[in-house]
Length: 113
Length: 116
Image (cartoon, rainbow over all chains, first blue to last red; front, top):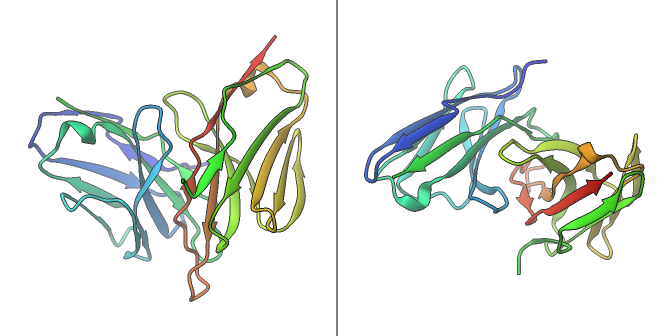
């Protein structure tokens, strides 16, 4: 069965650089979520999109932005990277509507040096 | 106080035993609850979802929800070494329009070790 695809798997950046993370949801899933997970921490909700519109916003820094495209894939853009942005970034998708079961991608490990 | 709290771990049980994982939540607006399993460095994997008071069984897993007590639990019967992982409890809800809220709030996780 198709799963949530994230790219890249690993990303190394330097401070003040920018990064773009991509997410391809499970086919027919119209809702995408982004989570950030620091070492030993639980996943923290960043932002979500339903039918290409932002549906909810969590603890996402102003330096980050995201969008969902017409093919439902989503991109998380991160600018002016800081050391504290180093984390595992997960994308998840769901069928939306009343179905809140989230299926997670393998994540992107971002390291900011 | 976190919105979703899990009992402090780590939890260690012998193979074949029952592992009991507990979770409490503070937001009475939460309507749905989930248990995810996460292996180190891997993504969370959905194990169980529960929306109504009572028990829900799926194979070796049983989720229990008590909305009055704001309490969710997960029982793993006949624990296997492959069950060793971090278990995340998550709560969600619905927005006023009735469509999916989708923003899950996770607990801090309980590390489970099943030893042979």
